[in-house]
Amino acid sequence: MSFDYSEITNNSSFLLEGLRYSTQLTAFAMTIGIVAGSLLAMGRLSSNKAISLVSSGYVNLFRSLPLVLVIFWFYFLVPMIYGAPVGADRSAYITFSVFEAAYYCEIMRAGIQSISRGQIGAGQALGFNYWQNMRYVILPQAFRNVLPLLLLQTIILFQDTSLVYVVGATDFLGSADKVAHRDGALKEMYTFIGVSYLSISFILSTLVKKLHQRIAIIR
Image (spheres, rainbow, N blue to C red):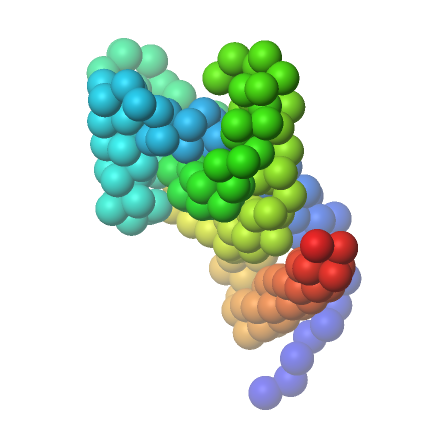
């Protein structure tokens, strides 16, 4: 079977637009997810049982559910509750931010727990309260310790953004899928999209590995 490369070149602008959407969604969900995940991690480690219980419940809930189900929740059920449509794009941004926060939380929790008690005591000796100690002493070190894991989770997040096609959002995979069915170019588009995801993920994973090695040397 012949492979028509012109299907890729002729639709490059549309495919790049889909890639741009996937990249923006990944960046937004990563930013919100890390911030919210850090707060959830502090909540899980809090001595306040109510805060710890709520934070743990949130994390366990979303880590126990398939991502596609959560996408359906925010796309179909939330508009039914509030009586107003959310839209595919907005629901995708909300879903991934809420969902990824649970995974970033566990990474940040491990990072916080990796800091020695001596560091916490040093911050307290300087007169820092709990939040100041977290901001200036604990979180910067914890973030650095788990930075490779945060980036690896972001690569997984980028791959998972392909699931937004189920609600009609035009991400990277969605753009290729639309071209494939419109032009009958299934083998070209699905081969191209597979190679693209493989290449992007491999390159990013290699960079993360080098970063991890560099951090290990500095330590």
